[in-house]
Image (tube, rainbow, N blue to C red; front, side, top):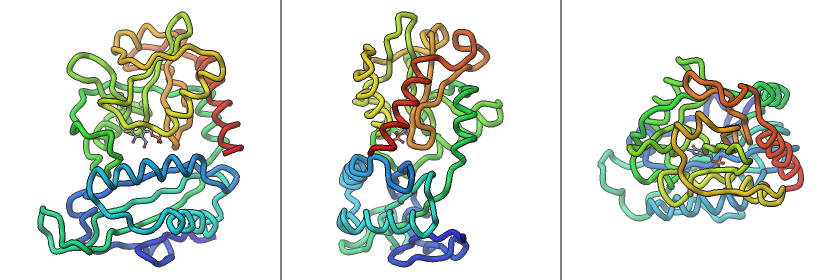
Length: 285
Ligand code: PLP
């Protein structure tokens, strides 16, 4: 089955799916995005993703490209046309096409909308989760509005490449006080020796991950104590477990931080339990 992308009102073969050179997403990274897990053909936690999209758009004063109902129909249609049962659906909204000028274009400029979907290799993901992944730490160098899911991701791109070159899967940003903020494309978590789950509050320095929100609910349902507070790299090095969360990875155990194993270097029981619980949530959502 050939891949299809939705671009500004049209369903196009993926290879022909292009945007204008003066699209502000291309010129200025003036746009926002969402990534949603697709499980058995349905979108996991669609409403919360679209709520966050609305928030990102309103924070940047980008008009909504279409009603929520219409957008939902496009998302489902792209998933259907690509035959995606298990995978990801990506949507991006930009401030539209206009003559290159930093200030906002004239009112009435149509926002740009692109939607793509792709299959994921569930077996490969589960095998990875059974092994766990490595992360490196890098200095936080992003703008303060990381609460907006903006396409301006250059520091995240560079951090992820640095991780890749170091043989790791993710980079954790560390703020000036030595506290981990989050990963380049994931939220960061640790589990203390007495099995308390710790993650940074979403009020500053991180994106409020949708997976994070669900995991907080699951952790409480499983009877774990959760502390929303910042943690340092030192604390993470001494933790019983660490893991990352995102729609792209779900709950992924972290077994190495920089040059040190986390505990015995194997995925922990808490992260593994949360991953299973998340899959059950995805199946029902
Ligand atoms: N933090 C950053 C910087 C991200 O880019 C992402 C996802 O792309 C997340 C956290 C996790 O968010 P979610 O769980 O909604 O996928």
